[in-house]
Length: 319
Image (tube, rainbow, N blue to C red; front, side):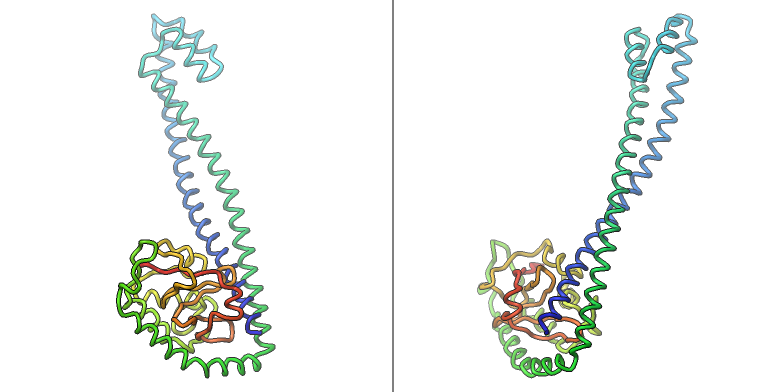
């Protein structure tokens, strides 16, 4: 039953990750839309000015007494490119004239390109809004299902949790001992040639996380009044000066992190489960601390059973 609740929560976390990713992309695309709208307005204004200057120059060419033959050239042109070709053939254009005409053409091309970009961006915005809406519905649906399931078996779960709490004191003591055992930097060394966090910081991450054992699970929570899984990780790491995002996929993708094989896990590493739908902080001895799911509290769990079956991998935050 607890595994089913965990699976539902992991599904909601994954849906939330899709929502957050779509939200970030939507924000970026909207910024691009604003920039392109402004650039389109500038290009239109520049085109009007260039066209006005070109018109004045064509009138001057026509009015010139020694260039009356240019009238037929100007009136016979079918396009700007044709006009340029005719005027160049007639040796009527100066270098300034040529630059002016090419300027008009350039602004016209800019307007066309900006309009295409805006159309594509509007389509992207529509698609992202739909993705966000679907992800939001998925989150809401899974959370509602999780809450109903929890309500239906609350007493059974409370008994299971009571048994689990009885085992956690010893687990917490083991974790503290494991953290204190990180005595030298050389024992941790480097991983893939990259300096890892100091043993002191590893110990600090675990010690801070331990302070919140028993804090209730709250969806979207990221404070001692309530945590979800990624909120707990974000909050704990913030206490050691590392700013992590508040959703599981982004924590997995955190730029300044490396993958860690399971047999090389160290206290403070992040462990991920259920298709990156759940995350916890490894504390040593095959155990980790996490905020499990609705109806539960921050607790210690073992990398066995459901967690072993759903294990995705681990990441070490480098700073």
